[in-house]
Amino acid sequence: MPSPTPAPQPRNPLHGLTLEQIVSALVAQYGWAGLGERVPLRCFTSDPSIGSSLKFLRKTPWARDKVESLYLFMLRDQRRSESA
Image 1 (tube, helix red, strand yellow):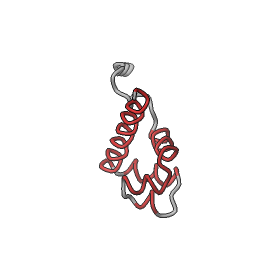
Image 2 (cartoon, helix red, strand yellow):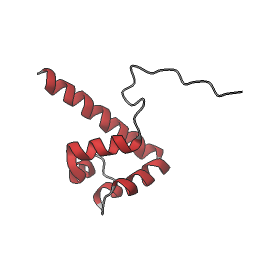
Image 3 (cartoon, helix red, strand yellow):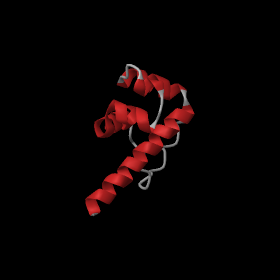
Image 4 (tube, one colour):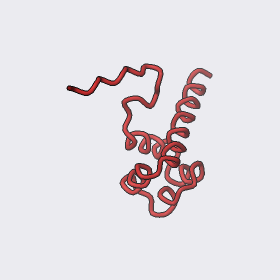
């Protein structure tokens, strides 16, 4: 029996995004130093790279939650500055 198709999530801004896309967008917005200040994880502050960050975040749900929360904050902040 085929697995059910996941329901569309039009109101979820994380839906359809990979963790790599989220981390890359945060690095583009804040840089590694700024990201490390906002989410103080060693994968962002000590010899950071997308690959090492993804490896850590995939194994550490609480850290991934923090990164996703920062991404959502960044989106809200961008929307606010566009409408101002």
